[in-house]
Every structure is written in structure tokens, then in C-alpha cells.
Length: 246
Image 1 (spheres, one colour):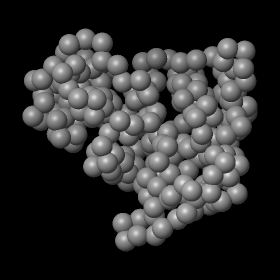
Image 2 (cartoon, rainbow, N blue to C red):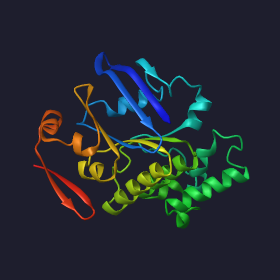
Image 3 (cartoon, rainbow, N blue to C red):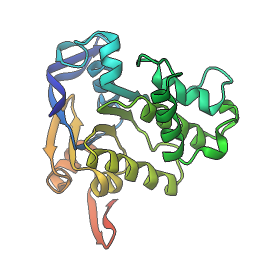
Image 4 (cartoon, rainbow, N blue to C red):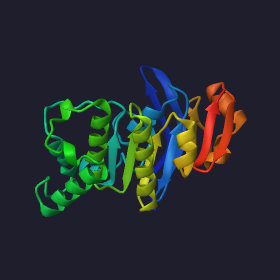
């Protein structure tokens, strides 16, 4: 089942072309890692797909009305600002706004409790979210997205600012969600983590998709040199591949 379908998507920001004719589909059961250098347009692609910025081309997600879109896709932006001194529980409950109960029905409570438990936030439930560390805030915002219970999750650099253990935990969670039938599109800078956890990689550079396929096919030397100007070394370990830029 296709959860996101982009066709001929182009974006211009501040009179500068950023993306040119992007075609991309995300299906149920996939963890798609969006990789590419800084400034390649990864955030712009996600924002355009959600209808948050102007674009040309088509996005089936952006074509939905806001209510249906919010029940179809949850979004974790790169900026993790929490504007009000609400409790972690109330922050997570915001993920239920698109649904009829508005955070108060038994189904809402079950979704909120499950998201808090899945992110290991039980001990922080009553704490003011603004008093959490940066990594703890990131986990709370992921829990908010989980509480939204959408088939598609779009996450912009979800492991940025997390310690190594939490990076692994986050991507294990995303892979588990994909295995459960969700679709995930996540931008990731760590090529080793992308290779280890993603079912598919999309390499974005020069405003275009340079490669789209299994990690082994995308993380090729010629493509890495073209996109990043680097050479990589792959080390296979019992826990999965490690990709070292050199």
C-alpha cells in the first residue's frame, strides 16, 4: 500500500531552485532513509510533501484536507521547539487532536499511555516538558507522533541531538514500526545507521534523486563521491554494517 506519492515535485525558496522534478513513493512496511549533503533539500522535500511550503508537481498527501492529512501522517520537524510549560503527558496528548476524542476518549488515553510507555517516559509523565534535557524532549516529541497513530511518519533528523544509545533505540523503534506495517520517511546523516536500519535509501543531491534503492546499492563509492565528495569504507559486523567516511 502506497502511503506517500510524490510526482514531479519541484521547490523554489528565496528565488533559488531547491528541488527539481522529484518522484518518490513510500509504502507500508518501509523505513526509507533520506540521505544527502546539507542544503540538498531534504527538509524542503518533507515540508512540500506535507503541503507546508509552496511547490509544483503533485503530492497525494498535500492534496488532502488538513484533518485527513493529520490522520494519515505524523510529522517530526527538525526544529524541536516546545512553546508552553505543559507536562509530558499533555504534550503527548496533543498527538490525539486530529481524532474525534480530542485526547479525552478511552481510545485516546490508551494511545497516549502506549506512546509514553514505548518511549520509556513513564518517569517523566508529570514533569514539565520544558524542564527535560534536549534528548528527553526529542523522545517526548516522538511519543507525541506515536500517539497520533498514523500509518505514515515523516521525521526530519530524528536522531540529531540524541546520545548513541538513544539513537539506536530510536531507529530500532522506527524499524519495528515499519515491520508492524507503518511507512517511515526519515532524514538521516549517519550513513552507518542508515545502512543498518533502513529498508531503502533515497540519495538526494543537486536538487534531484541520485539513487533510490536498497542501502547496498545506494552507498556506492561513486555516488558518495558525487553527493558528498567523500570516500567511504564499509566494515561488516555481527550487528550490521558500519560506514566510515574517509
